[in-house]
Length: 508
Image 1 (cartoon, one colour):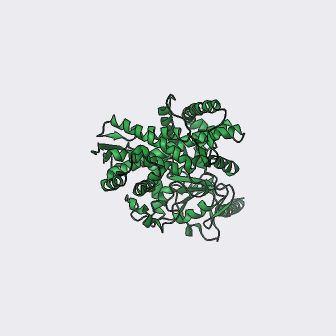
Image 2 (image 1 turned 90 degrees about the horizontal axis):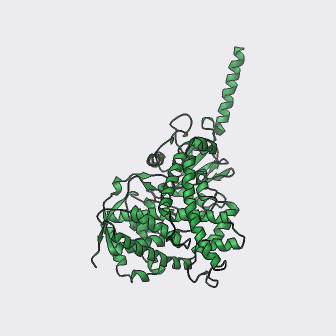
Image 3 (image 1 turned 135 degrees about the vertical axis):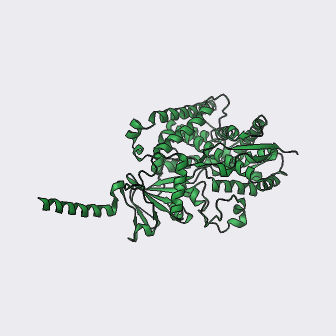
């Protein structure tokens, strides 16, 4: 009998060792393999877990700030090589350099969003950010004309109007110590609503609650992401912050519903049509993304739920990402007076602000470099994810079905191979003569490839308009310093501390 149990034990150990070659048994996930059969550690860095259960407990209950530090620590440990983590039910291939991301961004098949995006589904539905395959292609085709260059020219008028309103608000704030949240958040939300959605927020209550709800939803998502058990809907429903999440999502949906209903009433009053110049493919008055959606709804190409999904998506992406970039841009300009002076010299002889065109803003090369360097160091979206819907070969690796690919944009754009002294703010990196030999995927704040950000020109124009308006009227002086800030990892890059600046009116 004893011999039987000894033999059984030996056979079990042999079987487990064999199975463990293909599965990380204690992490309950299938392993990533190399196409050429070589050991995985020769291709990538494997991050050792804190326990024998892979990396499942490495992020358990960490704060957003600790999560940022942890991921930067992994990048440092891997010494610039992309790395692999082993979590409950899935292996994660983490890309942190431009060379490894090239094949993914050029892929036409590896476009499905990662599992982290599932947590956003109750908030954003299956809009352009979340959808994939046929639905994504249809939505992208519907929405792309709403960001045509000619449409941006009409948006430019709104950006200037809102920038002038922003200056009026700044006149009433205490100039010695201004929290950038006090004016940037409202400015960005107004812009996206009046341009992409074509609706003024005047008379629509709830914008403050909407902005707060977005941040609360994000905090819950980050907390959920740091506990592998919470990935399961039932466990999250029973033991997680499901009720709070649902409450905040309802606040965001109620606010976006008010916007849709207001626009729908205007649309119906116009007889289910938008005043379109078919020859030039843009509106004679004000053309908006929401107009496009309502027109396609009338044609049966999208339903009301689809409109809600896209409105929620663009309100979130168009507001939060742009406001984040603006905050960091003002922070950087305050820290570096010489750089701010060069920006002012570039804009001081421009025509009256009200008369500036898209072409005028596009000619502001150095200000564009400042914005790009801000995006490089502080990308509003610090990482994005993909999911393998079938076994996939990428960069010489065999990724099993459901494996996750995390693209750490912030690490890619702080790679010293492409950006020497990556922690130093140097806008000159992006002058034309300095970018001729830049790797095509070294600077990717708006992602790249087929799933790049549809609104990147929209965002750059909005940010330029705001900065020109502010710099023409004020010198921006430091209160908060970058060295004193703690960055936090979430859907959007944030700081633990508020950012304060001082404004000194220019004597003209």
